[in-house]
Amino acid sequence: MATAPKKPTVKPAAPSAARLRLRGWGQRLLRWGLRLSLGLFLFSVVQVASARFVTPLFTLTMVDQIFAQHEETGDWALPRYRRVDLDELGPHLPRMAVASEDGWFWHHDGFDWHAIVDALESNRDGGSLRGGSTISQQVARNVFLWQERSWLRKGLETYYTFLLELLVPKERILELYLNVAEMGPLTFGGEAAAQRWYKKSAKALTEDEAARIIAVLPAPRSRDPRSAEMGKRARRIRDHKVPFPGEKGFDEMGEEMPRLLAREEEASSKR
Image 1 (tube, rainbow, N blue to C red):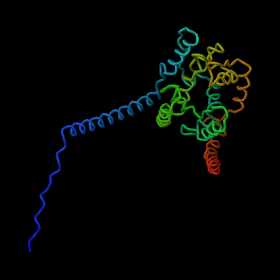
Image 2 (cartoon, rainbow, N blue to C red; image 1 turned 180 degrees about the vertical axis):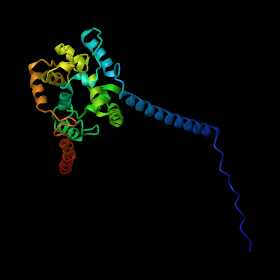
Image 3 (cartoon, rainbow, N blue to C red; image 1 turned 90 degrees about the vertical axis):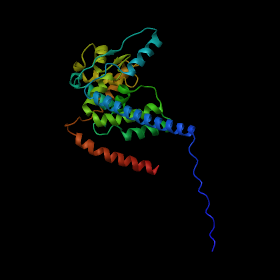
Image 4 (tube, one colour; image 1 turned 60 degrees about the vertical axis):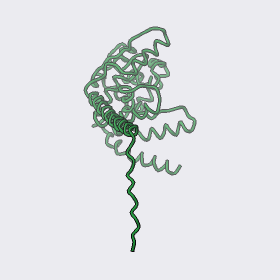
């Protein structure tokens, strides 16, 4: 029985020189992209790890405010900025900062989800725009990034906040915050603010004076802590003090946070 003749095997056409060059460029771009990503990752880790021991000489926020001041007044001025250790900031300023800016600071992992949900609901319902930023998020923004709002900055802020909580102790995060936060026009940190507003060191501030300085946040360029309005805000801050590590009520507060988040999640699911 005759067999059918075999069909000749057709060899695939060799890639053209142009296609080979394009493939080579794609591989090189991929390698460079991976190297760049790895380099940026390592750079950010070194940045945050160094912040554990070194307070920056200046920040992008300070530079931005120098130019903003020039646009407003036509004059150039250097910022007031004095870096000090946490124990040199006195007993009141750290407590007032936590009470006002981030009551769950000692217990969260960098993100206060309850405050974030509250802020989203307030903004959705047409209330005044609110943020849900913790002290850790503000340090990430103030030390490593810039102030202008954008999705890029928010994403980087989230990433740097995660690194901060991973690599830097809570006490140091609070110390960084109280050294770089703007607490008056071109006045950065609690020590510089105490000298500007009350002509004394931060360590010598009374509880009311410390609360008034913190009360100017988040609008330090337009508020005077010595005003009657800031006095009212300061009283509310003093009434909202929270326990620090080792103090009575601290452990109970930490146990309450998961229950609070669970209730919030249940309420959100019902809505």
